[in-house]
Each structure stands twice: as C-alpha cells, then as structure tokens.
Image (tube, rainbow, N blue to C red; front, side, top):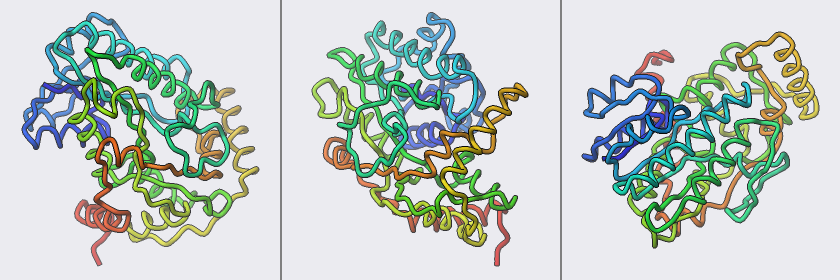
Length: 336
C-alpha cells in the first residue's frame, strides 16, 4: 500500500493515477473526496493532516511508503494556515511513519522556492542553501518542512525530497490556468519584458520523477536524505514559455510589460490594501510574485539524472502540443 497525499491537486492526482495504472494499491489522504481515483480503485481517507496525530497514524495504517504532496500553495494567507498545512502536517506524517514498522519510504514534494532568496537563481545545484525566512509564508514553511523530511532519514525510514519547478500541462489549475485567464481578461503582463531565463516541468515528467524516487528509495540509496531539483532541463526566456502556453490555447503572444520596480511596488500596495480590507482571497500581485517574475530561476538537474535516473522524456514543444490537443478536446478553445 502506498499513501499519497494531496490527490485532489494537479500533481497529487497525476501521481496517484500513475501508481494505480501500474497496479499499486493507493490510499489517498486529504480533506476532500476524489471520486475519479476512488473509481479507479484508490482508497480515500478524508483527514486534516495538520490535526490530531493519532488520527494521522490511524490513516497511515500499514502503508509501505508515503508520497507527501499535499500543501498549502499560493502566495497569500495567514502564516498559521501555511504552518499547519505545510509544517505540522509533514511532522505528523513523519512521526506516524517512524512509529510504523511497515513504512520504510517517504518522498516529500518540496519546491525550488526554498532556495530563492530574492535575486537571480541561475543554474544552481542542490548545494545552494535553503532560506530561513522569506516574504512568502509558502516558501518559508516549505523550507522548514523539507528540512524535517530530510532530517528524518535513517535506517528504518528512508526519505528524500523533490523540488519540481513550475509544473504545467493539461488539467493544470495553477500556472497554465492563471496565464490563460489573465490573458483573456487583458491583464497579463511580462515583468521586465520576460527576458529572464526560467525552467519548468511538464506534468508527466514531474510524475515520472516521483515514481523514480519512490522506487529507488532505500536506506543505502544515493538519493536517501537528499533533495533534488526537477525541471525540463530546458532554460528559456520567461516570455517564450508564456507565449507557448498562449499559442496552445489559440491566443496571441503577450506584448504588455511592466518594469520590475513598479511590479514590486504594486505588489506591496496590493498586500497593504488586502490586509486593510481583511480580504482572504489572493491579490493579483504580491511582492514575492513580482520578484519571481523579475528574476532568473533555473537549476542544474545533474543530480536527479545521476541518482534517480531522471530523464525529462516530454520536451517543452511536445508538452505544448499535448496541451493544445487537450484544450481543443475539452472545448476550452474552438477547433479550427
């Protein structure tokens, strides 16, 4: 039995489907139901992982491995919400695993944001230090949780962390959906012209990396106790990827720009306004997002290739083709 958390999300659902398709028994731990996965044979346990530890231990049962993908993502919300969902939930799962003699593997889904201190991140590898504090509660709490996961590695429980970057593809409700929604609303802007190099990862490649880590993880494995960047290995100007996604949806390229300093200032103003109005929805722009859009962020994936055998089989062009096919078949864009 393999436990997967966050199965109602883009990556978690894709990982669960891949495991079920190859014949693994899967138990989904999360707050909401996932009828599609239940129909495929998954067991679904609805639970707050950041709550009672005894309940988490009961939900884990006799699972042999855990793929912990669930997290509070986004860039806005109370620190306490992020800490509970990202740190407390991870700690609860790790404690349950350590007390359960049946569970020997723990794969944690982290993020490259744990090494993004604000400036350009160009071609760094896993030796880059993780942040201690960020203007984003998401990045800070994910860094804390990653450290918990890696520090738990030992003879009885082998752990590793994956840092997939900017996951996109069919059914993506985050990056892909936001780009398309803002473009259709006329609100999409490139910060600094979108010239900075970034890397991303197509959903199928992100899933493959998780399965490779899960299957190869053991106490004496090269990946035990380590974190790995997971990307396409295809750094490109931010504008190129955004325009590719727009083209897949039959939309024209983005030509509107905003200066980096102005984007950061706008993010600060919007954050202050949201706090004043006590709004819980996400502002259109925050300081963290402005920094992300104004800086380079691409990574050396040599370690993942070496230790996990990771190869991004689906390149960006093929991923965009598949995205276009999906959007047309789903009726999101009209067939020519």
